[in-house]
Image 1 (tube, rainbow, N blue to C red):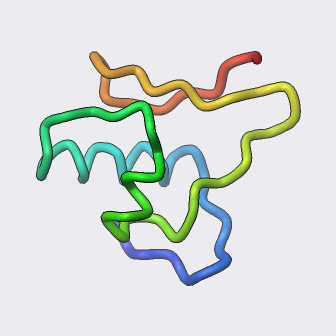
Image 2 (cartoon, one colour; image 1 turned 135 degrees about the horizontal axis):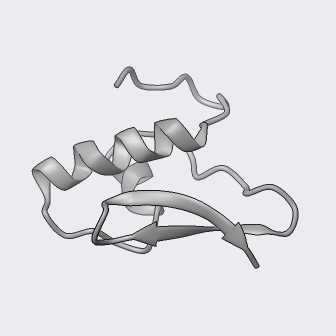
Length: 68
């Protein structure tokens, strides 16, 4: 996955790609998406849409948007 420029918006698809890349290196799936920022896979954790939140499905190794 190409690294994003600072200030770029990260899509849900890009979050999932970054999570999978991180999982290949560190097989621990964290609920904290800031680990992807510290690993320099994404520039920042984007705000979810109003009324939604990010949920990390550790079994599927994916990020989903769910209702708050």
